[in-house]
Image (cartoon, rainbow, N blue to C red; front, top):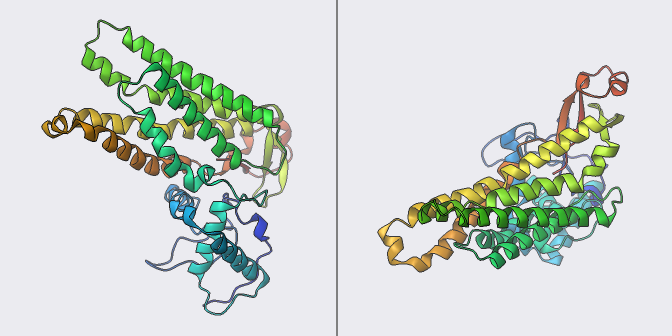
Amino acid sequence: MPSRQPSSVGVETIAVPSPNDSSTVVPVRPAFGAWPMFQLGKSRYNLDTYTGRVCHFFNIIDPRTLLTSDTKLQQCRQLLENYKNGTLPPGITDQDLWEAQKVVQAIIHPDTGEKIPMPFRMSGYVPFGSPIVAGLLLPNPSLGSIIFWQWLNQSHNACVNYCNRNATRPTPFSKFIEGYLGAVTTAVGVAVGLNQLISRATSMPPATRALIQKFVPFPAVAFANVCNVFLMRRQELNTGIEVHDKAHNVVGISKIAAFDAIKDTALTRIVLPAPILTIPPAIMAALEKTPLFKRYPRSYLPINATLGALAFGLALPLAIGLFPQESTIHRNKLEKELQDKTSDEFLFYNKGL
């Protein structure tokens, strides 16, 4: 086992899920079955590539970490503390260290050092969100059902966003409430409005209306997600965000970079529900025409729920891996005062998740 130098990063900061500095990225596994040398607070995947980011987020959302006991969590934290202090017990491998860090990152908030409630962890997003997806995709929903499932979905999203927020700077809780209310209002308004519009389209064949109605949850959720992002992060548009050079020296504050960060984040929130709320309805529409399905109509709900959960589990890392969290912006695109402060062609900023 190769010798290691103790890291200067404290255990309380290892859960930061944004190790995107290309100068510190750990190489992808050198060979099948091999593990790269452990680095505290870093990813074992190459986050400069889309494939590496997808693998990184698949690792983060692993639901097996939900089963971690308090004793196991404490052992993982102690192991990382030993690594930091250079006092690792004999026989500890790189795999042991990567797995310990994975457990701690999944459970402990990187800024507060506190445990994140299980339903609102990134590793719990799919298991606890899949029943909500099944509710959103129920056939022939009533007005009350539409309102309830859209409200529950945005409530769950808001709690996940809040519990995984950047807590390095205090943000008024009222900002999260505003974003939550805006998202709920948008989701319910769009869903109810589209369903009413479809139901009044009497010139449309009933079968066509029923098919179109299956896809109503997607635009409702997508619009609500975008509304949520802009409402909760609009303060960044007013004040700007930090941009820094490759050496992580802060060059200044940019509103242009803030807009790009929010725009890219909003785009991922549109992409995320697309496969979740369009692929299962399309498959179910095809299955409904088969003789076997007509013979066993009660299989609709379990099949629909299973398809929704599978689509959710695949879509989440594929969507949030679209853009690097540590994003790049050309100097000439920034404000004039920032251009005058550096000669670097490209600068960097934290996009957020």
